[in-house]
Image (cartoon, rainbow over all chains, first blue to last red):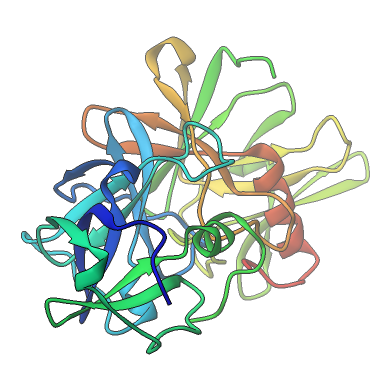
Length: 154
Length: 151
């Protein structure tokens, strides 16, 4: 399987026992996790909603889809994403990480694609980067998880 | 949608939620209600033969068996079918004192067909969730029907 482009400018987000590789252009800001307000009746992967630049931004823990959930700590970060395509311009969302994300420029020739999680609904691609297990999120699947009525059970 | 002049700040189970104060709301004090004793904290408003239930909820919006509620907020006056939420305390907050921002809860729409929240009032570093009246009405009606709560 080949990636569409030769080079990806992205962020490696430490979540659980792996990393998520996301294009930098999708990320609005990386910051501290603070004052999470619980949202009743939310699924367990929604940790709460936080005040980010005077906007309510839901914070999610996707790590629990691949391993143990992230326990928020002083090392955790909230990676705030721009709204997904087709969604309202106010619908920012955030993913929690277990540590500071790492900016990376990935040469696709140096990436080893794996089929480990090829069937995982929330990863478009699984890969090894410098011997680290990583995955590129499937944004359409995430959109379904976030806003559709097809949420998959944990 | 018309912007309300006030929001109703409700307090129950240690949490605070807002809801737009529309003409569709009715407040009833505890002394005007009949307390129901069927294992959950609920009360009935009975006026001219029309009996309307109200329920107490915990911080996760699950039914409570005990509550120190003082008033009921009834929704659905326009439809003529009232359903109520029992609250410990409430007050009116002028809209001008609030910064209301739209909010879409994640995880899909609940079984009722409506989200429970559709906005948040932003403070300096935190926020208060704002009930969507249609979502709260549908949720409470699901309690009434015993159809199960949540998703």
